[in-house]
Image (cartoon, rainbow, N blue to C red; front, side, top):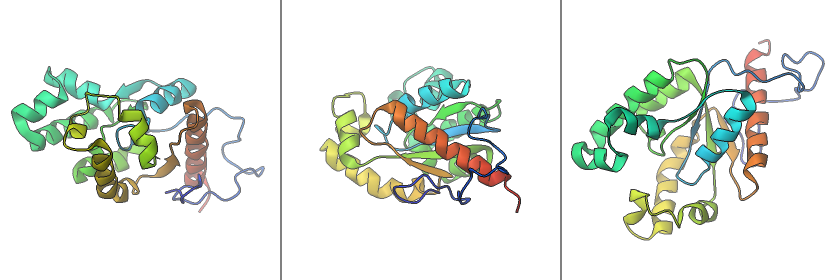
Amino acid sequence: MTKPGSLETAGGMGDMQGAGSSMDARSPLSPPRTIALVGLMGAGKSAIGKRLANRLGLPFVDADDEIERAAGCSIAEIFEKYGEAEFRAGERRVIARLLERPPLVLSTGGGAYMDPETRDLMRSRALTVWLRAELDVLFERVRKRGHRPLLRQGDPKEVLARLMNQRYPIYAQADIVVDSTAQPADRTTDQVLEAVRAHLEAEQAPA
């Protein structure tokens, strides 16, 4: 996991610019497994995910879109008809199926990583990246989006703050953490790519 304000990964980054590096900075990046983006609504999972997939030459898949396609109705309707437990079970099945495919870039719903079974599945089969964002950044991005059911449960900023308190300690278990700030999405995408490269280099480094 990265340290706050850095792009170091849990495996330890160190100086990866030496001649012995297994992945030269100029070499194409070819992730051996799916990159799964986690984080709260407004963190930029779709915006960054699409750019990341384009840069890597991989498909981009939004897990929520796949869930709605499989169920034949919206996520809000699934919650209303069947409840959260059934939704999470369906979400887990869909994500498990997606993780059986060749590598892709996967954007997951904000609650997916909070489910212990889904989290274990993602951590074992994917490279998980938490797009961490401050409250003001999240609020600015989602305040005009009326389709967010959770934000209808009170003051949107207070709801986001509560979700941050609940979820950020769990999101911190992701393999990589990159700050999603108010900077251009392309710059954040650059940082994700740098962090992924460093993480994979650390994995391949001799023990």
